[in-house]
Length: 126
Image (cartoon, rainbow, N blue to C red; front, side):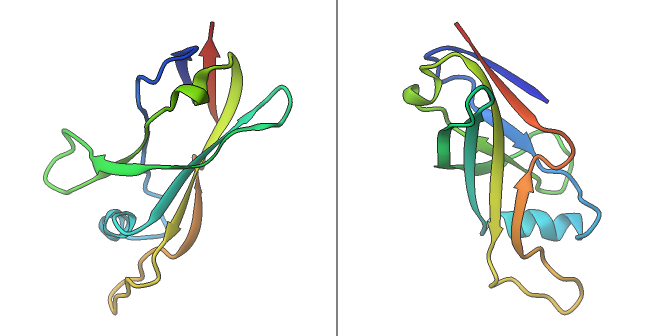
């Protein structure tokens, strides 16, 4: 997965759609994400240096997905995040709250690293 932006730009916002991992009830996953701590990190592929470390993220309602509430994870770029051109690998860490429990189905717990299926490459162009 590739995300492109210009050097020095703070737009567009980086957004990551949540996926059904097959391990949890999808509705409960979206309920659990509302109380989770979510951070973003970005590493330079050329030298392995972290450019962003544990940047604060937020969630917003995903538009046009029907009747159920679904969320997307967002990270707003800071000007210092994009002042250097290059190729970077990004990841989101989601730490779920242990406060949610259910007799019927378990909520996700612990830490989840996204994306799951393929790396997120961020290309910052001159």
